[in-house]
Amino acid sequence: MNEHDSEKMSALLENLGHTEVSSAEAADVVVINTCSIREKAEHKVYSALGKLKSLKNRNAAVVIAVAGCVAQQEKEKLLHRAPHLDLVLGTHSIAKLPKLLEEIRQSRKQINSTQFSKDVESLHVRAPLKGKNHVCSYVTIMQGCSNFCAYCVVPFTRGPEQSRNQAEIIDEARYLVKHGVKEITLLGQNVNAYGKDLKNGTLFTDLLGELNLIPGLSRVRFTTSHPRDFNENMAAAMADLGSVCEHIHLPLQSGSDRILRAMNRGYTFAEYLDKLRRLREKIPDVAITTDIIVGFPGETEADFEDTKRALQTIHFDQIFSFKFSPRPGTAAGKLPDQVSEDVKAQRLEAVHAIQDEITLKYHKDAEGAIEEVLVEGIRNGTGQPFGRTRTNKIVNLENAERVQEGDLLKVKIVRGLKHSLLGSLTN
Image (tube, rainbow, N blue to C red; front, top):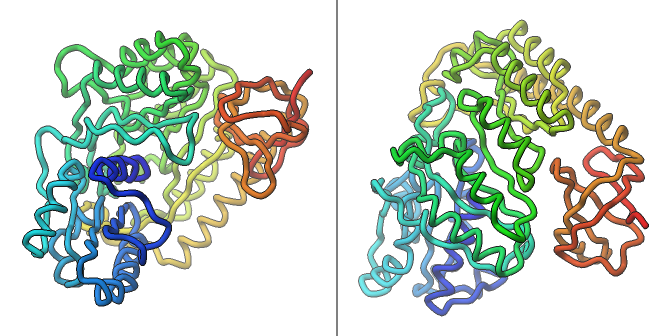
C-alpha cells in the first residue's frame, strides 16, 4: 500500500514537471514515505532525516518531506526533532502535495498537513503507468480501517474505512488494461468490508464480478482480507470468477483463542478453521497465506503452542511473521505482561522453522505440475524471466530466451526450492 502511495506521489510530481533521480543529492524534492506498523520503521525515518541534514545545509532550496503513517502518527513532533524538515504529509493529504510544495517554496515555512478528511482525495489519484512492473498494477479500492485490533495503529494513521466509488475503480482498471496491464491487485486495509460505508448496496463481491467482465484482464488479486468478514459469498466469488486468482491472504495472527480475544480479532480459531474448510471445499488447490504475531502481551507458552499447532494443522503456503511491537495509541501498547525480546526472538525462530518445512514441501510437491505463469519481468544481470502462478508462487524460468514481459505461459515446474519454483516452458 505504501509502495502504491509512493507511485501516486511520483505521478503528482511528474505532473509538475519533475523527473525521478537516483540520489537525494540530485533532487529538488526528497519524499520519505513511511510505515509505522513496527517501531523499527520510525527509527529508520529519523536516521534518514539525520543523513539529509547535510544536504539541506548545502542546498537550502531542496524540499524535504516525510509522508505516510509515521508522518500521520508523529505530526509536528517530526518538525521539532528535524528543523531542516519542510513538510509532514499525512495519509489523507497525499493529493495536496503539489499545492503544499508551492506554498513551501513561497513561504519557506514548515508545514504540518495531517488532518483527516471525510473524502480522501488520494483515493482518486491514479498511479503512473511506468514503474517497476508494466504487467501488474495496484488499484486502491478503500482507505483506512474501523476494526481497532488491539495491536494495530492503522485506524489512527489511516483513519476509518472509506470505500472508493465502484465506477471509478472499474474505469481505472479498464485504463490500465488498455495500456498493457494484465494483473490488478486491489488494495485496502480490509477489502472484505469494501462498500459497507457507501450505503448503496455495493459489496466487494459485486466489484469482483464487474472486474471479471473486463476483456484482457487476466488476473485479479486482493489484499488484505479480515477473517471476520470473510464469508461464503467471498469463497463462491473466488471459485466462480475466472479472473480472480486462487490465493487469499487471511491474517490469523494467533492460534490461541485467549490471545485472539485480547487482540480484539472477532473470531475464534475454530471459526477461522471452518472458513478455510469451506473455502478449500470450493477451491481444493487454493493457496492461503497469513500473518502471525508472536509475543503479544500475556502470551504464555501454552498460547504459543496453540499457534504452532495452528501452523501444523492448517499448512499455510506462506506466512509473514512478526514480533509484537507496541504502537502509540493502541490498546495493546498499554497492556501489562509484555513478553521479553529474547522470548519473542525464540518464538519467531520456532515459527520460521515450522513454516519453512511446510513451504518447502508445497514447492517439492509442485514438481512435475503444469502451471499458468504470468511473466512479470526479466532479472537484471542474468536475463532470466520470472513470474508468478495464479496461487502467487514465484517461478524462475529456464530455457526461455524468447519470453517477454506480459506473456501468459504454460510452465512445467522442474524444481521446488525454499522460496521459489524453477520452471521450464512446455512444448
